[in-house]
Image (cartoon, rainbow, N blue to C red; front, side, top):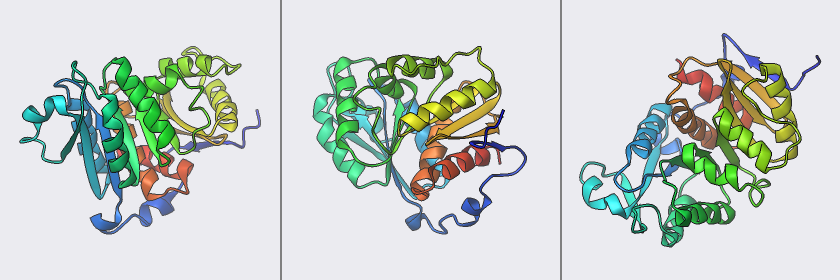
Length: 264
């Protein structure tokens, strides 16, 4: 099969120049806003914060619901807080502070653990419609997109880091003619993502058969995965967000390099 759109990253990075040209100081390394948490659960955004620092971000800010402000503010001084619902999730009134912080950053990571509150779902969808910059979504934050994608499918500067089950849901909701299944082989997945991202301006990272699969504008790269299967989405999302905002015009290159550099 002729697949010129499939790039295989095996024992060396496909784009070594990105590592050589990394920012030399934190002041040049970009600003990332991390959004997540609900009730008293802030482990996911806190871990994303640590992963972003490991990836080389200049400054990271974490936005949490104010339901946890009393508990978290002393132990996590990097956190900002926005209005919450009675159940402790982000309320619709969080939109203004979320947009304000996002416009002061170079990219946003919607890290997850946002809960299943319908008000929070509406908030995230509205935020993505109004915010014009780079947005990375994973875990249950990505479910907002996966389950109701039609108003967001043509949003540029969007990265989805998805488990295969989420990718299957997205394809079905987007009425994509090819089904994404766990039973497909790697070549079939690559071909399907080539077509999917050729039709919609989304970047997608998933994992299948021991490989990270990254698709951007019809191009696909694969990289051997050596991470813990239970945590890969958050880890990859944080590293990908950092490399991408530092190389905004090189999406495929930055995402491919990010997953390769995790194992170094």
